[in-house]
Image (cartoon, rainbow, N blue to C red; front, side, top):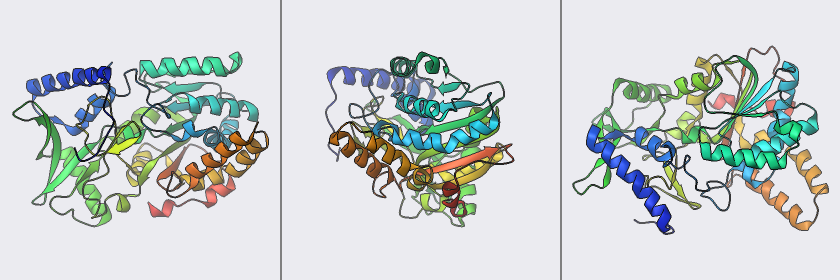
Amino acid sequence: MSFELPDPGADERVHSDRLLTRLREEIAAHGPMPFSQYMERCLYAPGLGYYSAGKTKFGEAGDFITAPELGELFARCVVNATYPVLELLGEDADFLELGGGSGSFAEAALKAFEASGTLPRRYYILEPSADLRERQRERLLNALPASVFARVLWLDRPPEQDWRGVLFANEVIDALPTTRFAMRAGEVYEEYVTLDGEGRLMRVDRPADALVSGAVRHVERDIDTEFRDGYRSEVLPQLPYWIQAVAGSLTAGLMLFIDYGYVRREYYLPERSDGTLMAHYRHRAHNDPLYLPGLNDLTASVDFTALAEAGNNAGFGVAGYMPQAQFLIGSGLQAAFESAYENASDETVRYRLAQEVKKLTLPDQMGERFQAMLFARNMDVVPLPAELLESDQGDRL
């Protein structure tokens, strides 16, 4: 391997080997598996996948740091942007967080909701990982007043009953199992994972089915180009179905997605000829998704134009789109920072707050790489902050 990564411990290697054995058995029995299926196994296989096993994922001790892990300012801004929606919808309004991570966002958000006097009726966390659910539960139980903790409920599948409120997802779509495609002689191929003659994982291309081919041709038509031979990237043909599954029962309210990605014409630039797929292991990014399966977080950037299309198809309208920095500034970041700075216990805390703002907003950190997209449904008025609405860059989609 051309990149240097920390050596896994003995237990980690045993864990990865167990998943590798299962992958080999599945490929031997059923033939090459689509890369999207391989990614799903690596991330979510019960007891073995990256998100379903017990290893620490988030923060300094994990493999990456998300915005909520930096401090409470991110969550306070999300609350500033969304609590007026809950207030307008009334006492039966709920808040649904997709993928609760370490629980840091829920903790900070619930404290901010309580301080604003607009606690949602229920704070749902859709978390399929039993391990992460327990970590979140323990954290929130210890951090929140009993009356606030009582509002938190965990789900292992999207709500089936109609509900009203706010759906929030931070760094969720990048972890959806992605389809990898490649162009050969003008035809669309799909990337698969199979075994070489010595039983090692390898990637191969096969002619794409109608769903994948149609999704790629749609992208070509939309950006008015034809991908050249050898071009390789990602596409999420299942995204419209996923949005309908997670948000179809949201009858009135707001959806907010924050993730790293691009509008479509920037996502599929000619020079980005191997896509955006990345693996993350102990705070190091690399480009070999077959390395140590089950120990790496596998992600692909989000095509926000595709997300807008999926939301529209599910009955939502795009209410705003902008870089994360503009979203946070428009949602009261300065006031949140000044309040936290004044109440800081010492200079060390103040320094951390300043560093948090820099990481959240600077272009070479999270400020430009991450984007925010808001959707609304069945709301005559969408009570978003005026400064947030003024930052809208939806015309770029």
